[in-house]
Image (cartoon, rainbow, N blue to C red; front, side, top):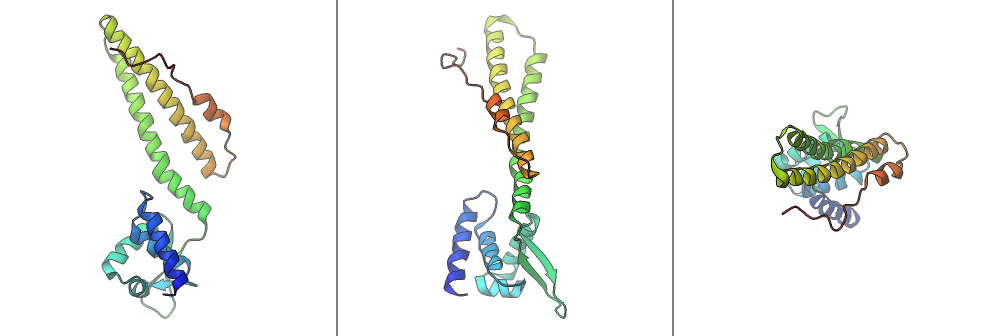
Length: 182
């Protein structure tokens, strides 16, 4: 591997390691494939990165799931070959859908489930009502914000302009004097 490729491969590995999405080896594999002119066989990738075939194979499958790498069959070869994706818009759509929007929806579902529990509970006494009202206000703020972000990311992933007004309306500031009930 030449010095330019090695520098890029290591940089991609470092970036991937901190991404929370890819492993360091996946970043290195992507970097190698991205700077290679044409598909590479699994054997070639393992040799360049000095990794075991099994380890590289597992990590390439993860990259294929994220649509960062495509598998090819090369005529005259019985080996699978791989090539890095270059349509970064499609890659970003996949990451937004599978990672961020899924997490946003988990938060919204937790808030809605807790709100339903508040509504179903039998609020006894002033302290219990005060606590339930406080929690309901906080959950409503959180739910509105995350729903607005979800809508914005959905539009972004479809290539639509992101209207910041939706997010601005959802950002409700909690009054400073409003603290948790005693």
